[in-house]
Length: 151
Image (cartoon, rainbow, N blue to C red; front, side):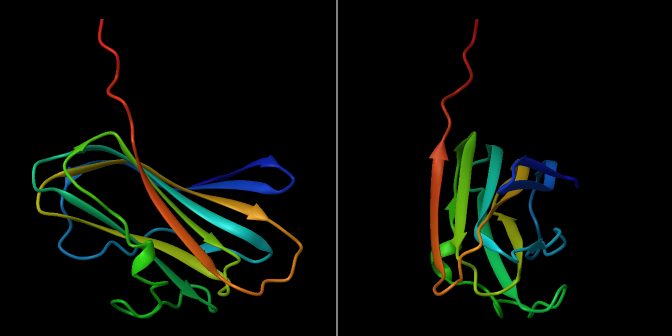
């Protein structure tokens, strides 16, 4: 998908979207990687639609210093702190921020289990910086969107 510059220091990269309700037998590892060179931060944003009863969405971020070369399974995962899960309910947003990434390439993986999960979009926001990286910090949060207004 295309990237869009918001300013000289912010780039939005679309990774996936409009995934119909379903489950995945294993982790989905086919999303485009994000080149984190010169980034102060890379923020992954996932907008979920309907999550059915017993449905579960889990996100993972993998890092690598070599393009398109990621370990299998959990090899290269940035840690369990960035594996948020979202359960039953509608219109949830998952935000994962990797600050000062130590590895040049990052890839977002996910898995939908239990019951049907609809993914509306997955994007990456790159925040550029010229400072030298010295540590890596990860944060996550899940936002519950209010239900759409009805007439």
